[in-house]
Amino acid sequence: SFRDLLGLMNISNDEFIRTTEPHHKEAVQHFWKQLMDNGAIYLGSYEGWYSVRDECYYNESELVDGKAPTGAEVQWLKKEDSYFFKLSDYQDKLLEYYESHPDFIAPDSRRNEVISFVKGGLRDLSISRTTFDWGVPVPGDDEHVMYVWIDALTNYMSALGYPNMEEGSNFDKFWPASLHVVGKDILRFHAVYWPAFLLAAGLPLPKRIFAHGWWTKDGEKISKSLGNVIDPVELIDTYGVDPTRFFLMSEVHFGSDGDFSNEKMIYKVNANLSNELGNLNQRVMTLVFKNCNKAAPAEIGTLTEEDEALLATAASLRELTGEAIATQSIDKYVQSMVSMVWDANKYIDVQAPWVLKKTDTERMNTVLYVLMEVMRHVGVLYQPLMPTSSNVILDQLGVPADEREFEHLGKEECKILLGREVSKPFAVFPRFEVPTAVEAVKA
Image 1: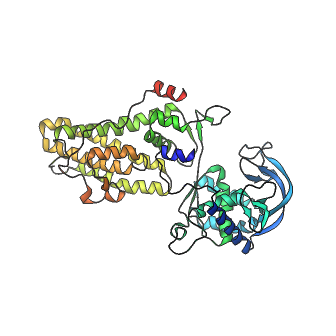
Image 2: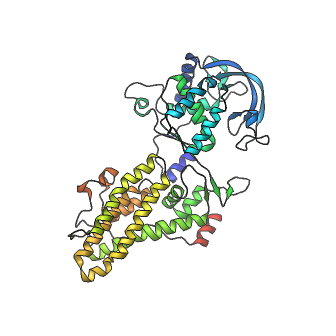
Image 3: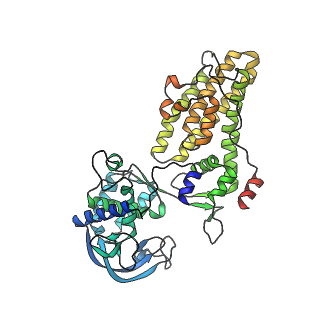
């Protein structure tokens, strides 16, 4: 189940919401009443094309070869009574909002699609049905149940305790949401219908809506009929949780479609994790453990220009990664980290502390200390992507468990402590052989 997968992928979450919960039903009905009181809903009748899979109504002009734009089958709904939301009243208001809030929808390609759709004209939206009884009943009219999206979208607020909006409530603290991350196929509901509902109810809009892309496999669309569905449990069993997370977050520009293949994953994990990050950590900590009495160097010499440059690059990582996350550019976050590790590997090769131990132990100690301090930054900042592996690296460095937050990176007292004991190093990332790993997944 999705709930089990969260734990399996080491993903933390505050709540797991189902729209069948009693509180959600109360929240949706309150929201409906608010829209009704504000004159945004009226009773009429509807007939037209509907996709059960997409849970969406489509105009005749939107159909492609008799199907929804998504490729889903559509069916003709015969005329039935329905409540409507006055979506047409919000065409100009939405366009004005998009114009004055250019970062509201991302990426830009999706923003342009939404604006084009709205400029094409908005019709009032059917928001209830009478031909089935599952769903939230319309307040005061039990013959109608709410159209699924007005029900589902209200979930963002019911999760925060809406309609309790009192000072100090979760809604008061956390709404409007900073970010909605949604699939590109449901962007219309989030970037057109949802803001229109909120505007009609007099409630603040989320600050940003980001549409992510889809994965293909070996260049083909993933589908049950093709038999190429990727089982996340098999991925984790074969590659481990952190390598899987790393690949998914680094392989494509977030917002674009991406293609998965076992060969690509093995290459990336071997190159960036085993060969670069893992090897760097192993080399540094083995030298420290063997040559510094199983502790960080007790004394270091004066830092050189090369030392200062590498430490400055490490110190700049927090700002770089923060900028990347602020725009959901997770791949750029990873690129900054990979580049840092590459610079550190180049530094250790040039400085050659294994040679210095025979000629200049003070310089060796200084080089190893610089590398440990760089690895502290890398370990702390990799935690959101690879929490377990990052903490193994920090454990080996001897970084206290209560000094691993981002805020500790710039604190002088949280730098690698001279002479602090370190643990015996071991390999953090395994190396995968292409035939073995691929066959394990295909089996």
